[in-house]
Image 1: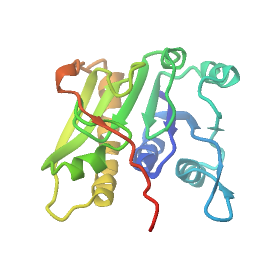
Image 2 (image 1 turned 120 degrees about the vertical axis):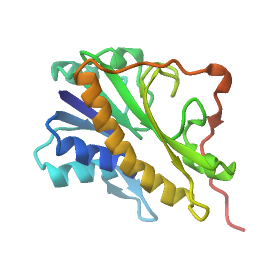
Image 3 (image 1 turned 45 degrees about the vertical axis):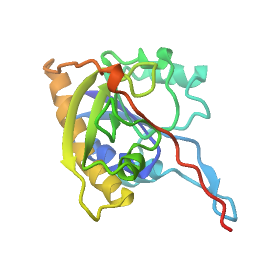
Image 4 (image 1 turned 135 degrees about the vertical axis):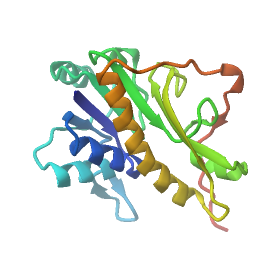
Length: 212
């Protein structure tokens, strides 16, 4: 299938690499703009941009300041994608963007939705002493992490496993889940399960604490 991948952080790299190695056609990669980092504010590319250009130097990279930008939306429409795959992108996609692909947009979220919607699901899962978590692939809607569930896998959390370890492990299994889900979509075999709003919980973004 014709895919456009949206991602920014390291969590999405295994999914992107699996897509690039698959029979699917990755038409473009959308990521956040290059930003200044560190004390020197050196402008650096995102983790996804680096991974994409290392694998496929000629790949089209799109870096809109805002995903609602009209010129960006026009460029997406011109590519005639069937599915948008979104993993740790960092911007809210409007309904106008969500309706561009021939089929729909899917998102990989590292929790067992509807639990831990939001920005920091893995950290909150660890903090709350959960013994089980997993990945969920949803058909995206305008409401954050509230779309219909297409696929889900579960895993136990190790006694000594911290958030960084768990994020890395979920990123690897998440890549496999996306590939399997795309196969179902391609063959019109996907099933949709609505999320139970009564069971929804939220994982707010972590706040940095000042030293001292």
